[in-house]
Length: 164
Image (cartoon, rainbow, N blue to C red; front, top):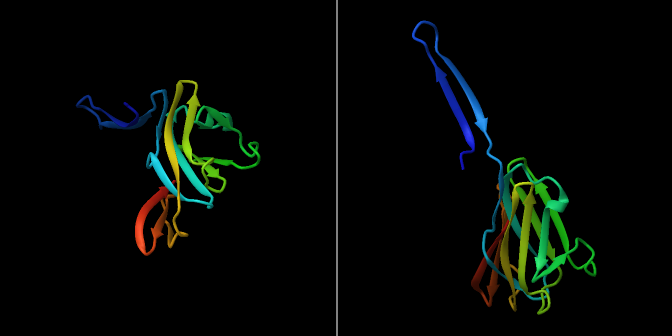
């Protein structure tokens, strides 16, 4: 992409040089990223999976982000009130978080987040596996909106999941 800040310098050798800075934003379809393509979650615990997208124009409306389980679209708070979706946009990136119901064999599976704008659409998939782990023994958050959850099984660290 050619997006970014550019600086123009003009001089004719007689007067003071002129500098001008400008920003170029090339229209583009969303570019979707996920932190990991497979998430292992403790059975019978709720879990959150997330996707992030950047694009120009920005993704601003709720209808521009969709979640699917398999081929079925997930409706926010409509699928037996089991799923909820929260979206945010900081002007540069859009983040969508799918809050899952308690993880069991019917909740485990492949999920897809899809972002759209007037330039196109893009998606990523995340596989949610339900595992029998003890409750998390470390939960940390930091300034860049990532949440780390360390799962353990009988005092042995077995998975570190980071959620946007």
